[in-house]
Image (tube, rainbow, N blue to C red):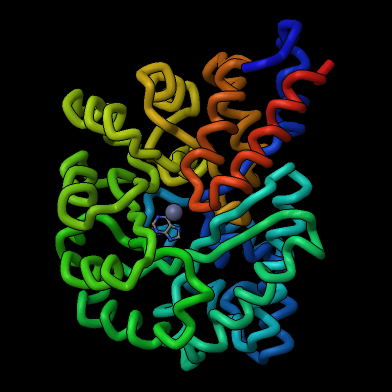
Length: 346
Ligand code: HPA
Ligand code: ZN
């Protein structure tokens, strides 16, 4: 860190909000706010099981990942047109930029939407247009990562990959999401090998609810470059060593872990221990419309609960650029911007 003076503890929330950062783990469908769900539902004549925006918001109480995925899926049924996918992504980008996110790598899935009769082309074109326009509209960059749904078969993932091949240049990477327990990474060994041959960058959710063995197989079988969540690694010393040694980033989502009962309170979260063990950890919002906050809320609440410092803040922001899939020149530009904020912060 390059700041000249120590930063007072009461100025830490302002620093966390002001610092430039990248967001590497958010599902764009999880940024659909209840009012947008209602307005799109009305426009597209999709009936919803909730009588009002407020009633929908009140249903956002979860016991585990599956209880969240069920309600999240209901929200996705309102998305129909290319413009809907554009509008959802553009709204997220505006919100992220307000949190000083300079670069976002956005998860989406096509299988949910093709399952509702919408083509993969409609989905990807709408999302991509928002990313393409992000520099002009919001002064930031954004790219797309397609997540296969792990509760479906590997054959279905292959079909999904085929459908997006004509849109290959619009997608930077492939990931793996949805119900984790019982659907280990190795179930998708062949389709990830194919995606790798095609030049996609690879990531996977692992060790969110399922044990550390899922993280080992995401690394050794799928050969992913980053692990999404990965919080169960703290229980496996050999895995922690591997993650540090190979500089495998973890995209950690503290408010998601709290809302899905992976931890009972934020004071129990392993983020600080991981960072101090040398893990390339980052902070992210996962599904911000459902989990009680966008990226800065994740930073501010977690830092307060764990007694983290400006040094941790710099490291997390720096890690977010280092772990991203942007090219070296853009990374240097963003890191310089980060250093500038730390040098001049009062
Ligand atoms: N975990 C797994 N799959 C998901 C999530 C998550 O937190 N959000 C959306 N799909
Ligand atoms: Zn996720």
